[in-house]
Amino acid sequence: MRRFLILAGYFELTMYLQLTGKLNQYINSHYTYLAYLSMFFAFLLALVQLTIWMKQLHWHSHLSSWQARLSSMVLLALPVFIGLLVPTVTLDATTVSAKGYHFPLAAGSTGGTSQDGTTVQYLKPDTSSYFTKSAYSTEMAKELAKYQKAQSITITSDNYMEIMELIYQFPQEFIGKTVTYTGFIYNDPKVKNYQFAFRFGIIHCIADSGVYGLATTGNTTHYADNTWVTMTGTITQEYHQSLKENIPVLHITDCKTVSQPKNPYVYRVF
Image (cartoon, rainbow, N blue to C red; front, side, top):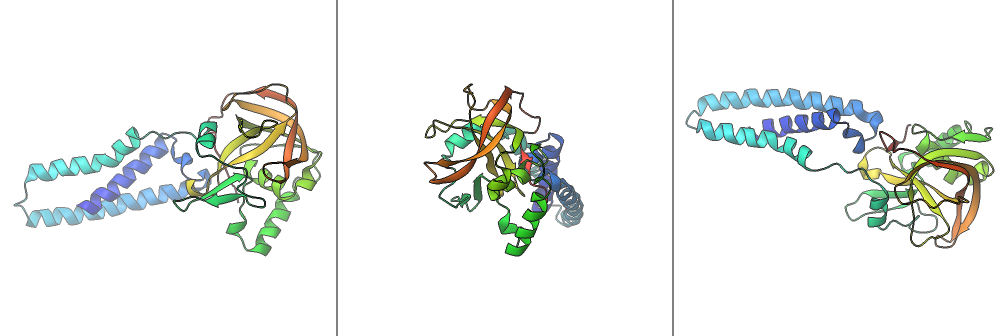
């Protein structure tokens, strides 16, 4: 019975997250088909376990029927109540500030490992750990070729992670290029001369998520945290005192406030 309830509860919770559009805050939206497969097999296995339990119940009729029904309903509804009552919070500048992010942790570093073992990335998406060294170089060169000749680049939700990784990986190739993208403002209290424009991104799942974007300068308007803006500017490279290294910076030529996208997250597409 317990196996049936666990499998059925997983099916219900996953179905709830999918129907409410919250599933894409936990996994890369391009892997949604895997969630469908897991839901199907969980449902199938739950039916198998229910059949086994019904046969066992037939032979153990001394069990209290009302106790069995009550425990079944409670345990079966528990995952659904958890999904309904535990809010799914969209990560924003408040999250960045609360976690005390540094950009990055140290010179040459793009992330760190938290106490729970998850990898946290900052500024630059880094997918090198998912490839061999030679395969990663080949992949980056292939992606870079798509933008090398372009003088004006529009960063969308679909190519956000790809282009951000390229800008940090090959900053010299992007210096002088005009870039347009949308993100939310984060004001680092330790860095007064920049406003960061970020989006939270997921490489595979929430465990390898991070906050990615650029430091911006040149804008005459100071925006509050979590203000969503679409900005256009020229990529430069400047020395960051706190990081003690050169980082790409967007020198803004045009900026306007916009509404938060329907899905504020971005995903890495391989």
